[in-house]
Length: 252
Image (tube, rainbow, N blue to C red; front, top):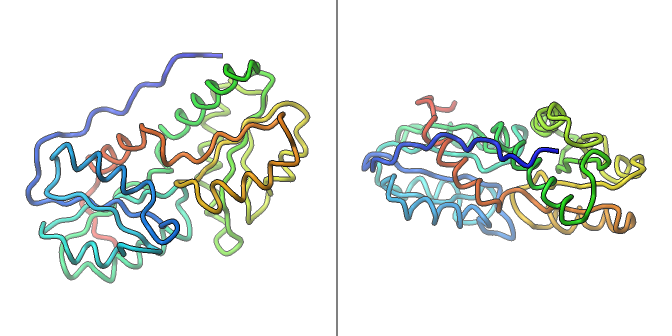
């Protein structure tokens, strides 16, 4: 087991951009922006962009409302989503409908960043130490939502699991989902030893908290749920890095 932290992403540019706004686009939770609002607040305090706003695909403030209220001629949109699937496709379609109003640049989805694998791995290693478990005898499961309507939504989680598996820290590394195969309950049931479950979710809402905890409850203390990823403090830096690296491509 390695206790060495992976290198942090290189620092994004810090020169103020009066002509550029940043929008953190998220699915939305309980009718609001959830943790995206906190990330937006942290980034806005650095004064890098003309304005920084969070926007919901489901809930308020809506994507269209936020973009219409911005004064900057160019807007970079960072998807605070874990999967490159159905919701990302929906975001692309909605941005395409807004592209006549100003220059829009769609940046990398946060869940696809290679640094996500490091965050999950290091969080699981830390919890193993707290529990007195040996990582080499503990399995790690990435638990996502999934959807039968868009099966490739799981590809992002599978890619992150592969990155973690390559490090050889845990006994086994799996992906599992709430609404598509392989299902979370079935995957955990097949594992004989202790299990760490990392929530491949942005917020601790009905899916990222309630549904996962309900599925895991019958397995008792041999399973530890790490919770959703979106509130991890390093996510703020990943959003900034995605905005810094954003290619000037108008979605459509």
